[in-house]
Length: 80
Image (tube, rainbow, N blue to C red; front, side, top):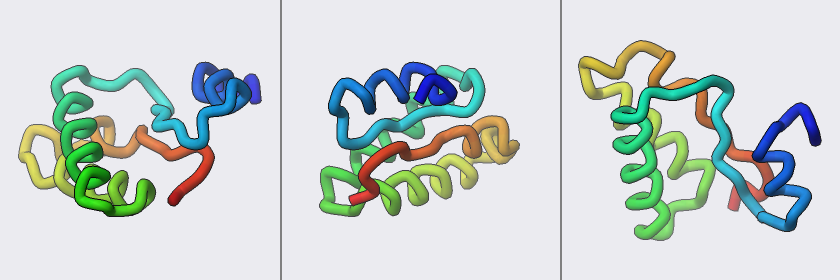
């Protein structure tokens, strides 16, 4: 778990799911990403699909098409 950093610590502490990033992310794009992710969850979309849709939404914004902005997010733990 130590390879997962803070996400690994959260998993060990009992969190069922964690959104982690593979590298430092831009704060403006991450705010948009998280808003989209939680909006999708609120509509009953499963976590893995909510993450995918949030990434697609981010890719649709011209200033965030570079994978640096949308690719680092991953779901650790339960996908449901």
